[in-house]
Image (cartoon, rainbow, N blue to C red; front, side, top):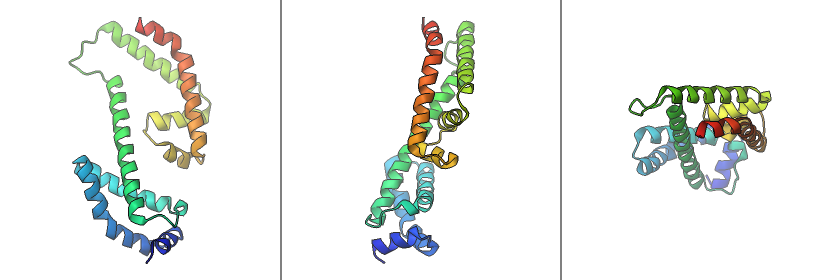
Length: 182
């Protein structure tokens, strides 16, 4: 079956075509990601997410795209997303739970807790949709595309909400940050 007919059948929801693609490319995508990351876990996660995305976004595919090229591009982007989410998660965990070997003094702990409370309060004062977008992005580590799908918004609207949320936080916390850093 030609690439055009394969993508066309996939866009129409043909599960047998999807199964054929899965059987043909699953191992190839897995080995590609494994060669880049040296992590079986990341390779497995990326491969599964790649095929889920292929199915979920099948209606938006372009018939002129080559299936193999498309899958490897999706796998690469998915892998990068996973690494970004892990990096953000690590930063958040470091802020929430300071390392035991670091010298944290009583005043520092109080200031950190106060800053966390102020952030929580500032987020709580956001309009409901903006707050939800912010929480999904920063606390649940969802991508803008995932948030858009969950909330039935466009990706551009999600981007705008995040920009406004960050602007709101900056404005709300500027004085506290200046005092905190002195």
